[in-house]
Image 1 (cartoon, helix red, strand yellow):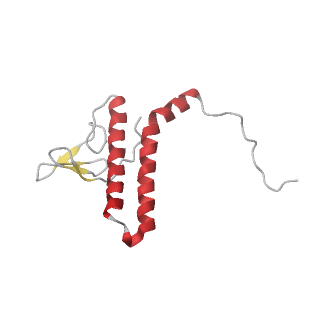
Image 2 (cartoon, rainbow, N blue to C red):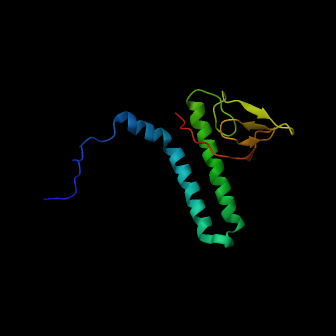
Image 3 (cartoon, one colour):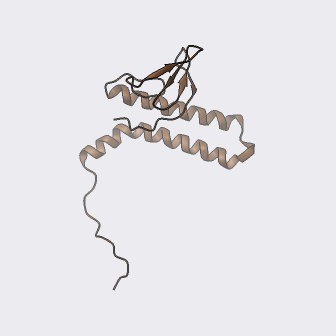
Length: 124
């Protein structure tokens, strides 16, 4: 007699639609893994993190933004530089840049990210 009560595992796997969604989102998953790897390398280096470690992290974060933007554009809408949908309200800053009201990221007049706060919503 087992004291652990486990429900039986069903033989159901992911549906074709689930697999297709994973295939569409795989570039974003890979980019997020690159960010995670860069963060782990920085944590392991501690106070001895090099400029190259910081550059790897920034590049990985920019890649995530680029992939999010591509996925959002494929979904049929324009996007802000932070990858939030174009319907999200932005505030104009004194220097001519803008700030996203959804994620809090800011960018300059040339759509270059100044401060990236992240993108938490799922991109369909």
